[in-house]
Every structure is written in structure tokens, then in C-alpha cells.
Length: 239
Image 1: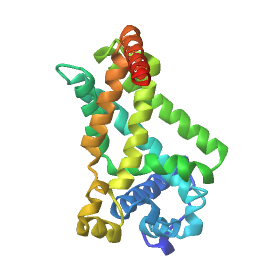
Image 2: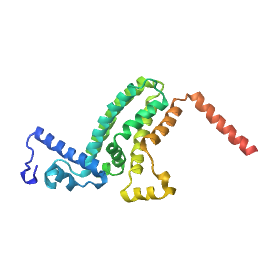
Image 3: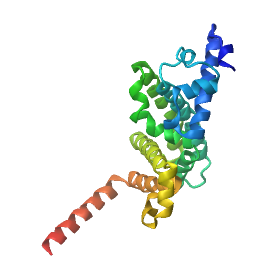
Image 4: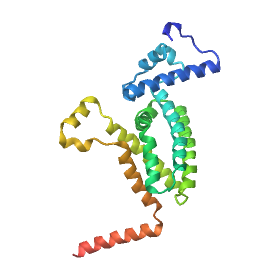
């Protein structure tokens, strides 16, 4: 749509369609360039409207991307739940792999997960933050239900910690794994920096496997491990 042809939406349905067009434009640009490289002017141009017209629907670019983050939660959670239910032999490694694979397949969502607490939530209204948080919490219920079925020994609290760990690491690892062109060229050119190049899925799977293994160890095993570590420290001091 040419900006000159844009007309303000008058009905609720027309407003919904305008908002969807803006979100689609932002999603396309973020996929092409990365979230940090996309401005409000860019989104307006891609959506075919003037920036002033776009501001009738969203107060800031951060509000647009926060809405996309909520949508990402709503899409990823049922996808992960379905993947968990397909596992034939659920255990720490297979469940961790399901988390890692489904997140690594969603690069823009990983990017959004990192940007949300750092930037997006800081330049929107309190109501927008509330709506985002509630949408994310509601989306987690699909994952909780699947974890209850596949890993009944995992407590609700541990499940919440597992999800929080997975999304926090996925967001951080995605930033590390997708540096800018100049930094990427530096990493490739200097063997000493080979460790700086990471693959999100295997790194995330290894850490989540270790996390789940610890969570699923009963209190007796945890206490025994702690006692063993304490005994080793005492023995080391006496030697």
C-alpha cells in the first residue's frame, strides 16, 4: 500500500488488520536484518504507511517487538509441547534436546528473548508490559502440561526454572552465535578465537541436560553428593 493511499482504520476489524500488517512488516524486517537494525520508519515504510499513521496503532517500536515476543511464546510453547509428547524415552537428554532444537529453529524468537528484558520492556507503557507478561505466563501452561506427562518427577518449580534457563540461554547464545559481519570475519580469520564461535542447539542441549539431571536427582542423592564434596574438601585440607 502506498503511504498516500493509506486511510485510518475506522472499525475494530480494520484496526486489527492494520495492526497485523504492521506486525508482519516488523517480523519480515527483523528476520532479514536483526531486531536492532530495524527502526520505526523502516516498519512504516514496509507496511506502506507514514510513520505518523503507524503511531496511531503502536506507541513505540519496542511495543511492536514486544507484541511479536508474546506471539513467539504462543507459537513456540505448543510446538515444544508436541515435540515433548513425541519422545519415546523421555529423560534429561531427550527432553533437553527438544527444548534446544525447537528454540534454535526460531532465530528471531531467540533474538526477541534477549531484547525483551534489556530494551523492549523499558520503552513501553506499564499496561503493555503487563499484557506481555501475562501472555507469556499463559503460554507456558502448554509446556507445564507436557512436562507433567513426560517427566512426572519434575516439580512445577523445577519446570519453571527449566523454562527460564532455556529461554535465557537461548537468547544469549543466539546473540553470540550471530555477530556482525566484521566480528564474524575476525573469528574466522584468527584460530585463537575459534572458541568464540558457538552453535546454539548443541551448547544449549548440553547445559539443559546437566540441569535436568540435577533436578531429577532426588534429595537423598543431592545430599549425598554435597556430603561427598564436603568430605573431599576436608581431606584436601588435612593432606
